[in-house]
Length: 489
Ligand code: 5AD
Ligand code: SF4
Image 1 (cartoon, rainbow, N blue to C red):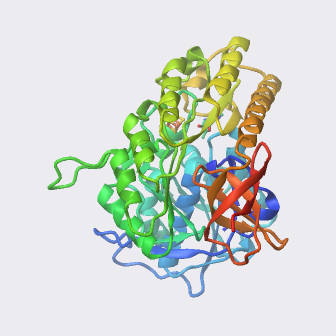
Image 2: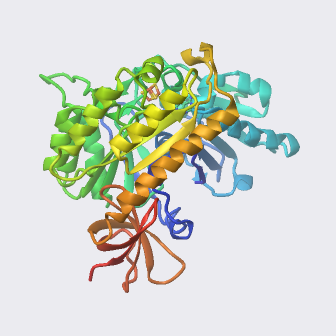
């Protein structure tokens, strides 16, 4: 399944391309979640045409990547076969991202290609955030599209597919007021070592620049029982690393089921997932600073299976801008969270997202962001130019910053962070990390993997067939974005 990522925490430290290529589709796996409860398949379905095939292209975040895995599972469950070549697919799905304008435009350039080469009877579907945002207007702009479905309605996908198979020309799933989370009977996972698992969907925060609450709907948490049941299945299927996903993953609230006195807190869920036999690493992303509490740090400190990495986006170092962004914390409150993380007994790496050029951002505000980078000492930062989005409150704000100036500020932030990473990474030379090997170079003896702290290590080893293994690697050199090392024999 091709993945055109606009951003991802995975690439925080940017692996060398040549080492990454093997991982792509090194293996894929089908896992049955075996959820209790009603089947997602409608009682009566029209079977897809014999030999029907599908192709999915995914844009955007890890949540989207994982949604595509679940959508693929739904299609496989209905008898479709996945193909890597768009031309040979009967059904083509684009799972879209609209977090920034550039990301949103990508799907329209894909859809535009059908103008020159009509779909030849293909069923073309638009999923994800652009689908939710643009709705039925997509049919106007690209009449060859027959399905438009936002992520909050994915539980309806099997029924929508059945309608298409029965000959319906246009179907939509655009509700966001659903309580349901998207749980599938089968998920087709792309990465053979690390399994994504969504524990909370949507977002109840209202950051003034962000489309997510609009495109993904309100916050809905999965029950801890259902999460743990899936983790056990994943462990049985051979996965040793689990990445828990949510737009604000640490805002998780266990829905109270009958007979429960109280649900698990997020920290308790982390500990319970880590305790499942066979699970060696548990990651979680993205954390919101407001809900980042001491018990999460205590859990990481006391449970080695919980990875020593927290992605805690700050967005700006200026309290004034943070207020205007409606982030619900000040610079000082954010730095208190960083101090909490730094007080842990084991070092925890911290990464962040920054937006530059927010309306009204002054030189002084930018200087505050730069000094916050110095204070926080992040191990990685994604920095973005502010992009005005439909249905967000910042759209109405005055004093917008010219694009060229946004570009300059972006470069300034990236340069400062690069310097910080050079120093931090050089301090790691001589240390040894346990690495889960997830890539091999064409050059024999060269491998790539990640530490628990999510650092990328490119390393040499005399051994062959290391993919999927946990290996001790000593760091021998550093660049701003990755480490170089050798296997400790
Ligand atoms: N413009 C620029 N960046 C944005 N992000 C979210 N919305 C916007 C926007 N309108 C960034 C934030 C968020 C990350 C996933 O994308 O930094 O943390
Ligand atoms: Fe968007 Fe803010 Fe929700 Fe994150 S917390 S998804 S930035 S609204």
